[in-house]
Image 1 (cartoon, helix red, strand yellow):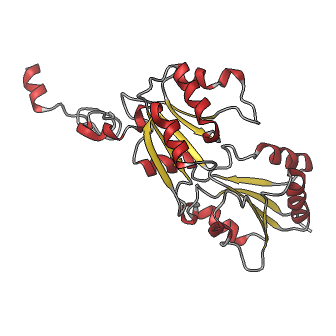
Image 2 (cartoon, helix red, strand yellow):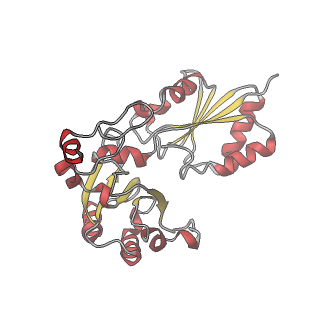
Image 3 (cartoon, helix red, strand yellow):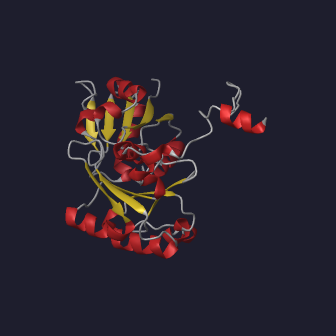
Length: 269
């Protein structure tokens, strides 16, 4: 019997229609679906065939999850292992791949829409605004899972970049203290986005100075992203002064020859 294959699929941030077409089709084809039921919208699991085995993984230890995948693959079945967001970001992916590698099992990773980018969309902002920020840092505060010392929040804050923090809202007081200590000023724009694209999505906007109070009053717990940096400021829209070169009429590139504005030409003449 030919062995099956495991597909690690990013389900996207929440809304079932934000999964990729490839991910949706693989779930619909799979014999076994194992999904992170504490994080993935049940509408994603509903793409499975009526006769497929569907298992939630929230209460299962790693060995049991991998054991179910191995049993299915060795029976010639296709497995859809469904993670929230994109599986490459805080998806507990590495340890599963390592065990499958050890067993010689075929697998493929299907990317998904990260909650980081869904949150930016919900806020109506670009994370990389010319002249404001050209770097996005995805990180987390140290909790029960540690963070390498060289990646502590004060060190990251020193860059002044756009910062997206996962798995950190329950430690928001420590987060803000570390970011202020690292160099972000108190007036730095900040947002908390709870369960982005879910039916009960909530968005809080403010600054580092009032972020703790806003989060505490809203009683936000898990499933919340924190976004910090000047790029998160909705007031940047006023005047549209921060523009990229890509669509600047005076900027030449391989697809278009730039033309200087008439006033600039007359001044040069």
